[in-house]
Structures are given as C-alpha cells and as structure tokens.
Length: 559
Image (tube, rainbow, N blue to C red):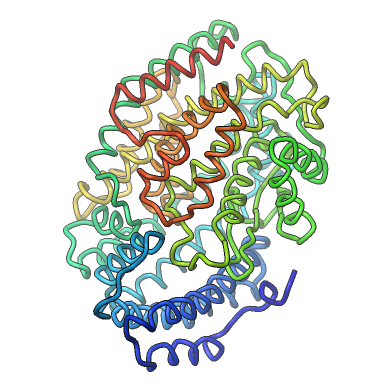
C-alpha cells in the first residue's frame, strides 16, 4: 500500500488546504478547479477516517488506536465539517454556474447538506460517535462460554447449525446470557443516543429525528410513507411464505414448535456445510469465483488480497459484523469480517466484495468524491446482487468452495436467507420509525423492549418464543440502531433490486452483468430510481411488486 493509506492526516495538514479554498476568488469559471481541489482534501479526510477506524475495529482493546480515532473524531472531523460548510455556502452562492449531468445530483446533495448543517450539532455528533465506540467495545469484547469453551459470538453462532437440538439450545441460551451481561450498559448508551439525536433534529428545525435523518441520508426518491408501505407489503406477501417454509421445517424436524435455536439448523438433521477451514482458503476460492464471473472482478479482488485490504477472521476484541470501507484517494476498498467457516460466511464475503467492486467502479479519477457514493439503497443492490450472481460458480469443479452434492442445499439456504431476512428488516425499520417519530419524549427502556417483542411476534409468527420473552425483547440492541440509525430497510429495498438483477441474469447472464457493472460505475451521479433502471430493475414499494418477486423466488426453490 502507498503512504496515502498508511498516513493519518491531522488538522495542521488539512487546515491550510481548506483556508486556501475559502480565501481564493470564486466565479463560475473557477468552479471546476475549486471542486477538484476540494474533492482532493475530502479524500484525505476520508482516508484518515477509514485508517483510524480500521485500527480500532481490528482490536477494540487497543487503547492507542482508540485514542487516535477519538482524537480525530473530537478535534479533526468537527473542524473539517465547519470548513466544508463554509465551502458549500461559497459554492452554492456562485452565480452563473450550471452543473453538468454528472454533477446535478451532487449539487442537490450539497445543498441539502448545507441546509441541514447546524454548528451546535457538531459536538453532539462527536458525543454520539463516542457512544457508538462504547457500544463497539462492549460487543467486540464479548465472549461466550459453551460446554467449557470460550468462544467469540460468531464462533458460538456457528454452532447453532449443529444437528443436535439440545446442543443448539445451550449455545443459544449462552449467547443470550452473554448479551444480557452488557444489556444494561447498552440500554444506557441508546437512551443517551436517542436524546442526542432528538436534540440534533430540533436544532435543525425538525419535529422528529426520523425526518431529520431522512434528509441527512439524502432520500430524495422515496418517503417514510413508502417505507411503511414496504413494511406492510412484507407482512402481507413475505411473512406467509416464510411461515410456510418454517412449517415444513418443523414437520421435517418432528418438533412441536420451532424455537429460536432451531431456525438455522438443517431440517433433515444434516451436519452443517463447512465452506472453508481458514480465511486464506476462502480468499483463494473467492478469487477464482470472481474471475469466473468477470476477469475484471477477479483482478480487483486480488488487489485487495495483495494490498492488505482484507481482515476476515473472527477473533476476540474485534469489532462485530462485516463491512466494506473505502480509501478514497486511491479508490480502493477495505473489507472487515468475522468469518468462522460457515456457508453463510462465504455469501457474506461475496456481499461485502460487491461493495468493494462498487468502490472500484465508481472511484474513477474524473468523478469527484462528492459524487461517488450512490446512497445506501443502491450500494446494497451492488452487494446483494453479488451473493446471487456468484451462485453458478460455487462448486469445486468451478474452482469454488463446495462439493457439487452440496450445491442445491447452498442455493436453498441462500434463498432462505433472503426471505427470512425481509421480515426482520421490516421489524427493525418499523421499530426505528416508532422510536424516532412516534415514541413519547420520556420513552423508557421497558417501552422499547415491549415494542420490539410485539413486532417480533407479528413478523415472526412461526417462532415459539414462550418462556424466552426476557431474551427476545432485548433484540433491538442491534449494531445498526446504535451506529447507523434508520439504515436497515435499505437492505430490503436493495433485495428487491438484487432479485431483479438476478432474474435478468438467469435470462442473459452477460447482458445482466454488463448492466450491473455499468450501474456501479455511475456511483452517485444518478438518482436511486435511475440507478435501479440502469441495473435493469424497478424501484417500487407496493404489495403487487413485492408479491411478484416472491412468486419468482418460489419458482427458484423448485428450479
């Protein structure tokens, strides 16, 4: 890697660049050069953010890494936000400049950001970042004691695939008990976050945080009412499909009801599919899979492998989850994961690699950093489509990870992961709409618990939670709620897009892949509706649209 990625930039490095942009004359003729130089400064800021966050997430117990990141959050980022706001005001006040096609949406986003900005919110955002860091430390340091072994949560969760039901129950309960040990602290952190977020919304003139966050996320193509429509469509058209499949699973398992520890187990009692023994095997096979799909994608994945841009193994004190971040100066991604060898781990890597390919495709030198990111919804189309586009290349005969005899099961589990995810996405989204727009000012933790439990029962009627309510009601203590508010239904919207991309690939793989890669290359230069169209999909939220895609999925189970 180059020094661009290895070096963290402090405020003394960045301030002169912002000052130079602030003080120079700015006319319509000057705008292109002004934007280019400003974009370059923001890239350095983005590199520093990604570098320092990566260090914290690799080891949440590293006090030096935490100190460096929090110094950036408290001292550098707020000053950069203030400086950027001044530059936005200067730019938007220029008379006579007409943005080109690739810049029009960028200017709309910059204008929305400028309108939303309040200086008094900067320290609140710093405080919120510190609270999320507390969440990451608590959850990243969590261990689970199972049958005399101390495991990380991902390692324990892998044992929920065990054919032995009693063993699964012990693991599930151990996971819940471990989480319960920190739930009081997580309650406190979230209530503090909620207070901060409500204050930020009021400071900006909004009645509630949901509407404030909507503009902050630049959701120009759909409304909260559209989200509610999709929640209802999932309840009407997806939940019955999941319930039918879960009932078939219950019958196959010969149990009176499905308990939470049954949901990931094979209905026929087969041992879980072991996708790989260590992450190097996963990386090597993934390189071959991507190369078979597209030589260009294979080369890009190898750039990540050879450049130290992958950190995939699960270990203690590593931040939970999986994600892709970007180093914008070089236009390269970084993948963080917690993989332990399951088949689902492989599809999660393909998912995150889809984000990475999006970074590569959109980070063309001529595209300003402000116009690279398309928004969460289409970013997830890029990633989720990759979970499906790789399906034909997963067998060992193709250089993949799985024995040919296991491929039908891998495919079925992939489809199940989609249909079972959608109701959970609706639960988390509905919960957040309630928290941020409907819940009373003095909402209590007990109210949060009860709301979550009621939604889980509504959207998961096929699961028997009796006697487990004290565990289930704390399920809202979820990563996205703490660090990425109101970012979750994006995944459901994206699945509707990804299924359409896959449907096109089943008809003509090369044409669908060409559309997909072209849509990725557009970055954030087009609206969400236009990006869906470029990828060969339609953006819609109604029950008819969702139902048609569920009919398509049902047909794929039998294909």
